[in-house]
Length: 179
Image: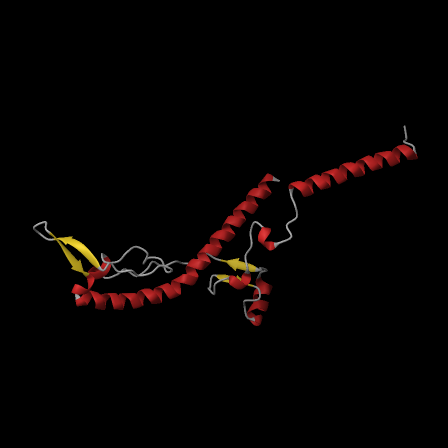
């Protein structure tokens, strides 16, 4: 039995009200984020470290960019960087260093004096400066460490970016599977 025009109008109004309710409910449950700081994930391209394992459009020279566009399309490409350990200190100074020297952001901090037991079991205080060769070894090793830290820091920053991107990739894959 066909509906008259009044019944059709009432039906349309009810459907519109239901959809308006659902729209308002969704906006209430999932409010639109208007500020980038409100977003769950943000990556500023101008804050990326200068490293060979990070490429993004705008960072590459124009002719190289055109060649890469022909090969593949991407905005940001982050590869897992190769991390290198800190150079080991000489044995002469290894036990005189506090923890933290294995991190390129860390510092080399020397323990000024230590209590050492001799063969008889008696303790005595030994100062780092008592052996001039320790100072020489520390100076030489510190320069190696600084060179390593300067080269390693961008790689560690790149690894953090890589891990953030990989985590985002995992969350996106998880959300796609839920849908």
